[in-house]
Length: 238
Image (cartoon, rainbow, N blue to C red; front, side, top):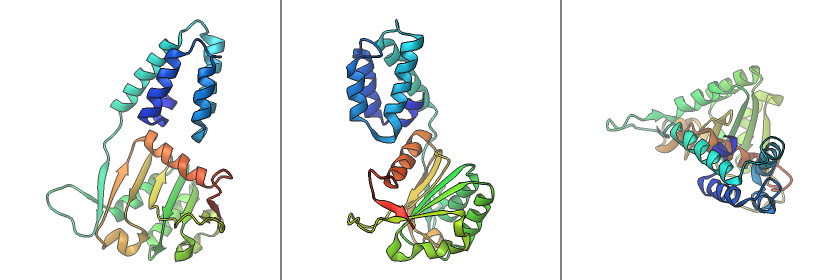
């Protein structure tokens, strides 16, 4: 079920095809699939599946595992809540849209273990800082991924060491850090055009979306965490 939630549809189909063709848990086809999909801990998860297959269900054909994966994927797909549109600025009477400022607060308040926030710019967000302080008081781990050239980190100075701040590595020349994300607990994420500024959250015409699909949000978090690691060497602690 975990793989069904985390893998994109194309990769999930590829894994099912590989399992269907595998002669058993030691088949080198599975080794090649792991080598071709190194991101986000997927080889470790597949290794755990192979170990359970080897120890508990060796006679089971790969086709049966592929079928189980397909059933799990169908169950996950059937339970995925729809995305919700979010706006800043004026709202029309034709669509039931929620405002970015309120959604941002809701996502932060919902966090129980982790918050990952990315923004190109940040200022004039006293309410956001207050909510982050409250989240830190709940022992939520908070990672802020910020563009250094805009001095965005200054907005969070009152939080001190209760947050971890990340900037682009000095030797990275691969563009600016332009993402805008607020994600809680690998299960809900707000993404869109709005920076973490008072005007962007309330007054500017901004468009965003809130995702409640843990599979998609989990992959987003895995990518952001990968950027902080030695393989990407893109982000450094600020």
